[in-house]
Image (cartoon, rainbow over all chains, first blue to last red):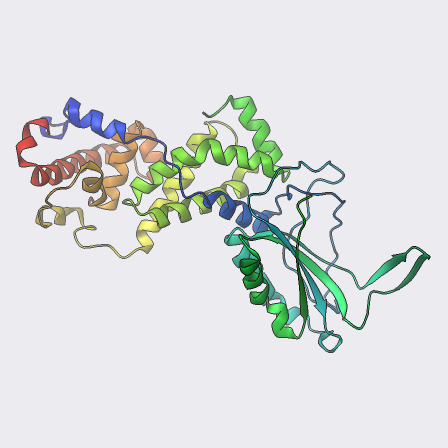
Length: 191
Length: 180
């Protein structure tokens, strides 16, 4: 039995019950959580206009390794187009020929960077590309190494940012630049 | 609004399959209530509350596949959040006046505080029991399950918590002694 002095008066009891109200957290918390989930579990991006193929990451991979865990989800489903709140940008990562061969020792670095931008709610998706691909033109197609004077296109990220300035800041923070790679930053046209 | 149990299960299943819109719907349904609880459990700190809510959803994502739906999703999420609050309390350095419950009587008197600030100055264990029971209406069994204590301990802790809260309020507003 509760001692009388430990009982609540009706007024105090009512005051305490009134505290049981919902509270909206900061507006950016939702994006932070979604970004963290994408990094941890591969929640499907809202925009999936093409089938995403999981990439086999072998220890002898000649190009950088994305430890993102993204793109694993529904296949072939129509994209559920919903307007994003922030502008989106594409980061195309080019490998300098001199840096080919660097692999496993950079994994931790990229992983940390991916988690950081995901935690900030900036990461949408990203994939590593295989070395070989098809270059198509109006004159037909030919198969050759996806290699040019600009280096090998080794992967990409799609991020969201409040502005080009912020997107540039994200791109500059990518460890790819420290390993002699190049990054092409392109705003995505919201057509 | 929490929706029907079947509706929640469908959303949870879709979320497990990586459907982001399903997650966002669950997030919007449950986060405001859980966030309000967490913020009070951590003594009002918004940053801590947001970090805990984020971690709650990450742990929920990991454990949702094994969730047996023996309680509502809201209750399950609340349990995860309360555990995280306890972990958070153990990690943080304790501010003056918080910690050893017996030291509360020696804490300096507080002037001009409202009920939420009074709660924020309670020792973490007292605050958690009082908020879960008197604010959110949990039974002592439910409080015990959430905090990893038995119902009897919850009752005794609640008595001490109420006593401590009344002391705080009494110092803040001496003329309101009758209302306490």
